[in-house]
Length: 315
Image 1: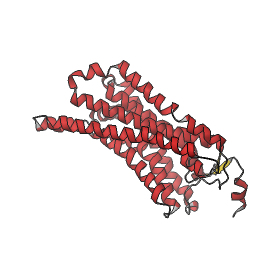
Image 2: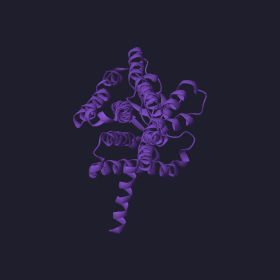
Image 3: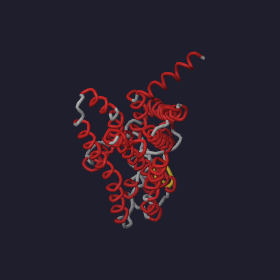
Image 4: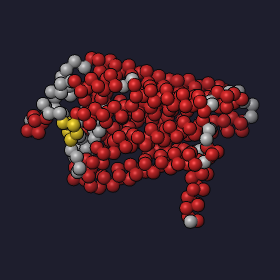
């Protein structure tokens, strides 16, 4: 056992895992990862700017899209320092307090993104199944209340399980599985009683991610039922096209979560590199892809972005 590992048993610092076996290529790896973070920031800021400056986009669907872009932007901010810092050689370890704070933001923002996707599914359900009552149901006041509920749900339920991490004893080697901190990583290194963290954490996942996924699925079953009842095939296709962007966003959020869960649960024999890559896909893929999806698939966003770049070229 190395001296570093022994000294870390009783230390309050944790070693971050970059890309095992690829240490000599960190400088080259930093280029695509830095580019990905730059695209996350530019893409989501562009979506927010377009929605803010275009009066025709001041509608419920785009307010929820702005919430999604802001959540993705915050996810990028919360992980960039450790992910890029390892590749650039700035950091190799993180303090317990910083690790707990980062895990709070990562899990909180994941729950927030799930909640926003559920709100967007509700928006599509009302728009397609109850089009005549859409404007009266999703008023600005209702959207504000939904936004506050999403914020409270994502931030107030997590502290009990996150705060308790501060009071656990960590007697196993302080080596994290990823280049960022996750709750399940920290309790894996604890030698204290972790039953509360395990049970409460599972309850959070079921009441947030799993429940949201089920409700999103139910909403689309209802939407599909309503669309199939439309006589005109052209109208059916037009109605379904308004849901394509949201379905893609749901897919890029839940598929990496399922993949990472499967790797953690059944992939203990796999190379650590697989765990690291799956972790980075879980963190980076949704914030990277959502602005691209909505810029391509949503006609109003696409036209406004094209007009914005056209005006810059003219100048």
